[in-house]
Amino acid sequence: MKQYIARRIGYSLLSLFLLSLMIFLLVRLTGDPASLFVEPGAGPEDIATIRRRFGLDRPLWAQYWHFIASFAQGDLGQSFYYRMPVLDLYFQRLPNSLLLAAVAMTFSLLIGIPCGIIAAVRVGRMWDSAGKIFALLGLSLPSFWVGLVLILVFTVWLGWLPSSGSGTALHVLMPAFALGWYFAAAHMRLTRSSMLEVLGSEYVKLARLKGLPEAMVIGKHAFKNALIPVITLAGINLVVMINVAVVVEVVFAWPGIGRLLYEGITFRDFPVVQGVVVIGGAMIVLVNLLVDIVYALIDPRIRLAS
Amino acid sequence: MAMTVITHPIAAPAPLAFWRLKGFPLIPALILLFIAFVAIFADVLAPHDPQVGSLARRFRPPAWQEGGSMAHLLGTDHVGRDVLSRLMYGARVSMIVGLAAVLVAGSLGTLLGILSGYLGGWVDQVIMRLTDSWLALPALTFAIYLAAIVGPSELNIIIILGSVYWTRYARVIRGEVLSLKEREFVNLAVVAGCSKRVIMWRHILPNVINSAIVLATLMLGIVIVTEAALSFLGVGVPPPKPAWGLMLSDGKKGLMVGYWWLTVLPGLCIMLMVLSANLLGDWLRVKLDPQLRQL
Image 1 (tube, rainbow over the protein chains, first blue to last red):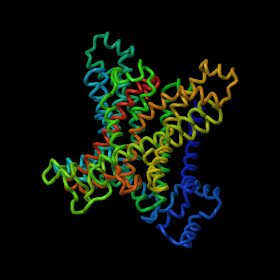
Image 2: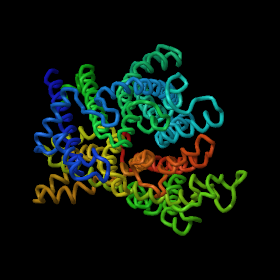
Image 3: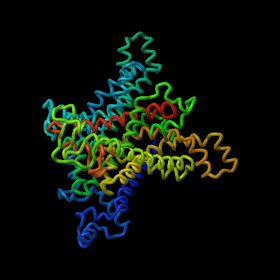
Image 4: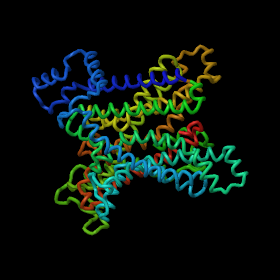
């Protein structure tokens, strides 16, 4: 067990190392990073100053070492536009992203789980197909378009909800729904397949043989156990949501991390862009590691197999 | 797309009888063919130049609404460009970018997947760890990051989408190769003295092509949505080229005053194309490759 966990941690560290190397090299392979830091058309002496100031005139390995060392100390550089540390900016925006992700996740589970259960209980019938189509729709509609249409309907035509910004509970509804629908599809599919698996198991058969009413079998015995993988996926997706909400946040002018990334791109604020991407990657590596370890703790087959 | 996919019917009794197979998603296939048709013949079909408009005719509603005219069936945008023509040329952009990106991602991923699965050892370790760290980056964020570095152009978008999405291929194909290489025919090829390269190229590749095709159809939708998102954010296809994502971005200018056609129509096009690709891919997945049913 210890060995397994040690190996998983080793893999994660390796992933983080490759990730950092990738991000470090990509910027340098695709051109002189100094040119990203200045306005287009800046003179050569300006570029030279920038190169010196950011240490870009030093050898590559020294630059990489500096990049890693400062990252390990939590220093992701200074934002050009806001003139403050990237990390501070990030933590300023994080609560908004968390709020958006939490509400979106609530929507997504409220839609996904009941649909999945109905589809599993009525497998192969009309409700099953209806659930499938709904899920596929969620996967096929770009979330930002859902957002735009929501604005059109609920702000422009009905005048019920504010179109953008944050502050009140009403502000979060539309962006959260636009973001949540996409994930509802995945949660619905997993609930369905997990329910189907549990419904075919011995203990559900036993519960039925005992003469329990069907609602009790599904609600108490099957549902609870089928929920475990769904909750795991929801946990991972919560982290994913924080990192992929860019377009939805832009549509609704929601002041989260995604919008920070977008602003970073528009203002050519390169440290911000790089910082958001690096933290996002590190977050996902960490969550994957946690899931691996928790699963190994629960299921001995996993830790013994590898 | 539909045609290339269907030239490899595994379960089909006769080459052209694919549409008679149970549950063949005829409507999605027709929709995709229609979009492909419009994309190819956009020059002939489009009533106006998609990139030139006149400010005198801006924000005209579709023909059936009050103030609309037959000259602009689906209305005009904020600089007076014909929406219908832009949608038609937009189909071309989506088709080209989508297919090319899937091709790039598919070739790269399949190649690495085969190398990783067949050669094993340190090659496998390196490729799989690379895949892990690649997957750690949220795809959209990663694409935005790359696009911000290299700057917007159609070719760049294709390369970016290809280099973001190859990992899914690599994972799945590697898994297939791992089981294929234990099979009798591969062992016989080894005994017969085939080199590793010949085995991978002649014996392994043809056997994983089905999975690659299924993945490609499923990937097409994801790639098109990502392209639209990138264009929407201004790091995708550069304006004034007509791309559906760009049209949505422009459509925001008329959103708050209720010019619905600028927002609803391009989105509907994206939805139709992606939904069709997904339905077709879903069907192919079950049909061609039982191993992928859990995907």
